[in-house]
Length: 229
Ligand code: SAM
Image (cartoon, rainbow, N blue to C red):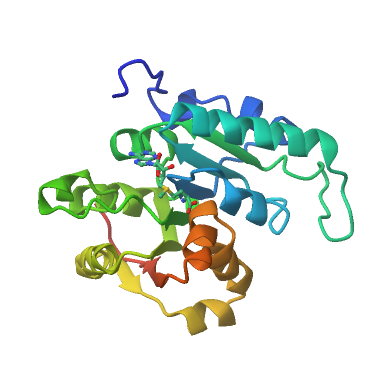
């Protein structure tokens, strides 16, 4: 339950400067959203690769989100800029996390057309059909994701549960503002490092690998439309 959580009334009520002090005054807001980020493996992998891009994880579990917050704070103080992780502001300054129920409060964090990527990596499966409405991808929520994503932005999904893969794929395919985009196309656009991180960098992804499980990837592009409501 989340009645004891504090939520921002709207994205412009969020003090992004406190999340990303090194970017204070730049007016930058998060461009990558990792929904259900767990222990933060994706964010930590991507942060040095895109040092000027702000990234935000959303995680509902208290201890887990606290752990990620501590992990980021430690990385910020102990890591020095290197040739591999160049940054005007020091490494990991561009990554942060909120404890939040993304299914209820996603629009409170991300204004229209501000995101270039949303990640749903190994979201909880909820096998039983009565749990369908508890899934992080649904027609209602897709409207919120499409609103926050800028045209051309990418939704990345991956799971080891085939049933969940089919569910996410079908709903994204059927939603008018998303079109499927294959891995080869994304790699040709320079998004290979993102795809590699999607497959390999998260704690859940590593667990699936140890167990020799399958990983089902599906990516979608937020389409450009001439006229929008
Ligand atoms: N993406 C991470 C990874 O690949 O390692 C974590 C995967 S884990 C199986 C799913 C995560 O989603 C859990 O940490 C869970 O607490 C979080 N989660 C579930 N429902 C959520 C919600 N409504 N809002 C935010 N996080 C949620």
